[in-house]
Length: 224
Length: 207
Image 1 (cartoon, rainbow over the protein chains, first blue to last red):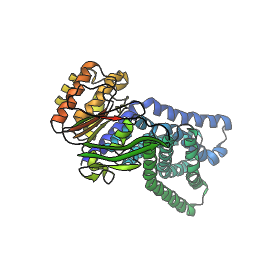
Image 2: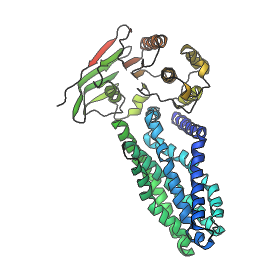
Image 3: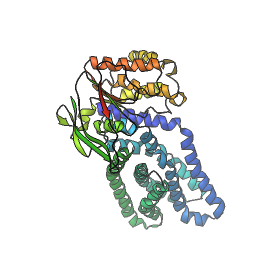
């Protein structure tokens, strides 16, 4: 019961802090939209091109947008010692990481379910393809959140070069991009296999992320 | 009883702590002193299992805290040299968060009277980002009352506090020990707490 109380307390705190700093979230989504607009202006109103590369553009911008959230993932709670306080309350670092992943997924990824159709409309992507992007994002977004979490926790160990965190996100996201974007161009009978692969990657990341991140957090706390 | 047995700690091949032995029993207050870099904060971090010593171990009621740190954490309040209150939340929001996090049985009235004592009551709906360093430090010390734990480990609790608050914290520490608690704290300021045991840490030369 005490652990549940602690989990609920941390969840509430995280949501409260996130919504208190709403301008941060707003600027992240503005970045996504401006990115879409830049593609529209630079490529021109060519429906065929956007139908072919639209899903790639959307996924690329989702990745870049997640890069912006990287520094916020653990850094503030690490700097002020909150991560230690959460731990002393009886929560393991693995559980703290899971809570952070859940909050980040809700706050950063859920709005994309509204933003993606709007982006699809701006890029003149067919309705069927927008549905495919939805499915791929449903499976891909938890993976992206886990990757951002891994990268954010590794950044705690790295006091000099913060660009490495973004690089880690980009590199680890390659399989997600391949199978997510591939869903649009794949034959209907192979779609189920692609979805299964994405599901497999999602479960793998959900399983390993708390362990990897907790090790990085513990090391970073010891080094501080 | 909290026992530190033969603690050795090195950082970057530099000796920080060498064979430190420490026993903190109930009703005891220990003041850790020493120059900058003598390892005061390091010792507290080892006592809280945040840092791992190169040699030696920390024992709580006869059991090494490494085996199940959460048993020890149930009895521990640790005030760090940093302030853990979130600057985007108000004083009240931080307090209610800590109360829920540590399943505190303190009533709102009790907390409000403590805030009044610390001259923080008028700021209860103020964002922590608008408070001064001393006020944020006092807010951090409210955790001692919220958590209601036996062992208090305090890293520089007097820093940033005015004379009234300093005396108040000293009184709180004395009362806690009198009621069966145990306290270990670091401070550069000489303390006026009676029957204090002092542990002086010395700096080591590079090997």
